[in-house]
Image 1 (tube, helix red, strand yellow):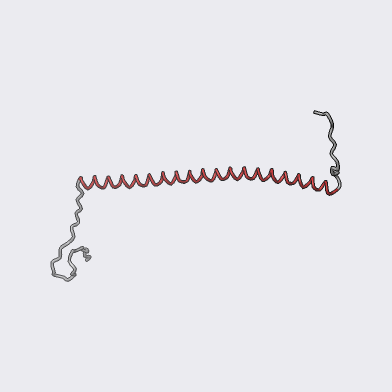
Image 2: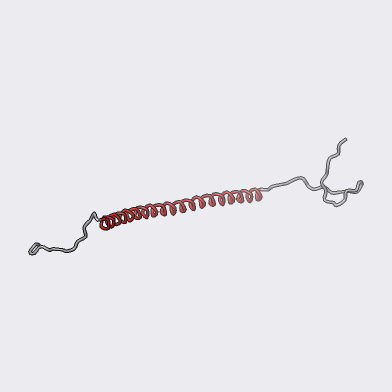
Length: 114
């Protein structure tokens, strides 16, 4: 034969000693329901605001990264142009030193030409 366990307020487990049990009833009044409702709404509002703020923060970071990307693309194009210019100067120097291009020894000007 089984016996149910009773939760009591007393610190003793002796048989034959009167023990008081915990009240198992929980009563929620209209004020408590309003308070719980306000707390739940406040928690949902905080969650919503934190999610929207996180989304805005991500979009700001994305905009910054896209700006850096466009700056890097412009810098790459500038460096490619500089590389091409320097290659051209090197080719001219090779031609002068290799004998393909003759150096100017004297400059002649036309008189009376406007």
